[in-house]
Image (tube, rainbow over all chains, first blue to last red; front, side, top):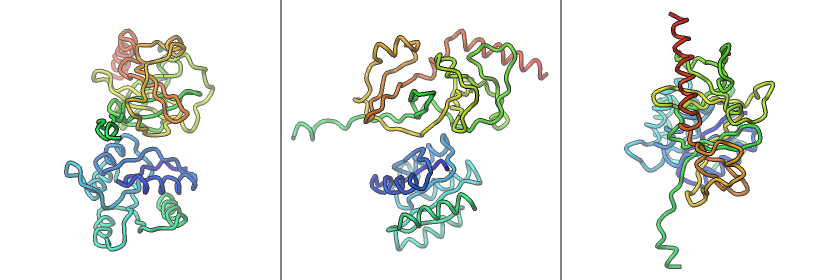
Length: 123
Length: 169
C-alpha cells in the first residue's frame, strides 16, 4: 500500500483516480485542485506517488510543470505520474524530461492506471 | 432560490486529519510543517511521560511528543506500522507529535465546525480544542497544536534539550 496524492482541477477526475487507486489497495492521503496546492501538500505529506494533471489553470504562476519540478527539487526520487489528454504529447515529453516517471492518457481503463502506478512504485 | 444564489461561498478549512486510538483529530494544515514516517526514536531517561523521545529529522534533532499520553488515551505496547510524526513549530522550536495514523488532508466547511460538546471538554483539557468538525458520519476533534503543550511543558522540553546539548558538547 502506498500513500498517493492526486492533483487535478476536475473533481470528477480526482474521484475517478481515487476510486481506482483505493481499489488497488493504496491510500489517498490528499487531493489538490491546482498545482500550487499540489506542491504545498507534497511538501507536507511527502506521498509515495503523485498523479498530476498536466493541464490545470495556473495559480500564482504555478502550473503542472513547475509543480513537477518543485516536487523533484523537494525529493529527487519523487514519483510523479502525469495525467494527460490526447494531443498533449509535447508537454508530456517535457514532463518526462523534467523527471516525471510515467504518464496515462485520458480516457483510460482503471486497470491501466493501477498498472502504471504499481509499475512506478515498484520500478 | 435567489437567496441561495446570493449566499457567499462557504469558507472551507483544510485540515491534516490524524488518528489516535479510536479518535479522529484535525489540525490546521498551516500549523504542520511536514508528516514523516517514524524513524528511530531515542528514549530519554527521566523525561516527563508526555515526551516520547528524540528523533533525527534530516540532521535536526527534534523532540517527539507522545500525544496519546498527553490526551490520556490508552497506552499501546507497540507502534503500529501506520504511525507517523506530525512535525510542527512551537515558537521557533520544531516538535514532532506521535500519532497512530495520518489518513490525509480533509476539507471541511466552516459552517460544519461546531463548538466542543461538553463530554469532550471534560475528557481533554479544553483550551486546545477549537471545535468539532462534522463530516458525513464522522466527528473530528479540531486541535490548536500551539496549545497542546502548556507553557510549563514547553519549558520542560527546553530544559531537556539544553541538557542534551551540553551532553553532546
